[in-house]
Length: 118
Image 1 (tube, rainbow, N blue to C red):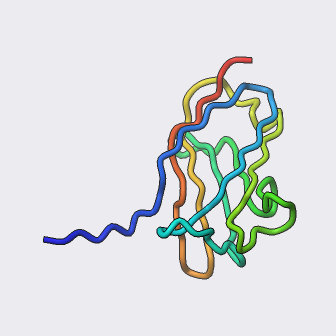
Image 2: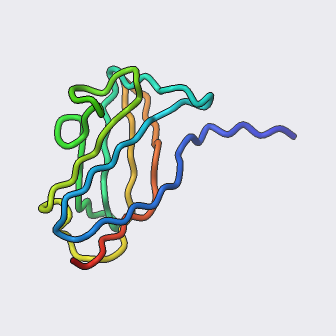
């Protein structure tokens, strides 16, 4: 029997320090390892616990192309967290990064998001 796996999500854990700034640079790539064309995609990154969203970033606030501007065919993005974003209580949370275009939604990254004491 063959298996078809359509789950492209990668488990990546993130650790940040309370009340500090943080920048995460990512290269989104396709299954061949080539840069994923992000043109036209809305990108969101949330940090949550249960049904509560603690931090929310998107292409309209906090996510940009690594070289500035809107995400493009290079697949390179930067997620920027301010000290205010990282002022949530120290502890372990979950996070996920999703790409949305038209009716297509792809979860590209998920995992634990840990806030260490300052």
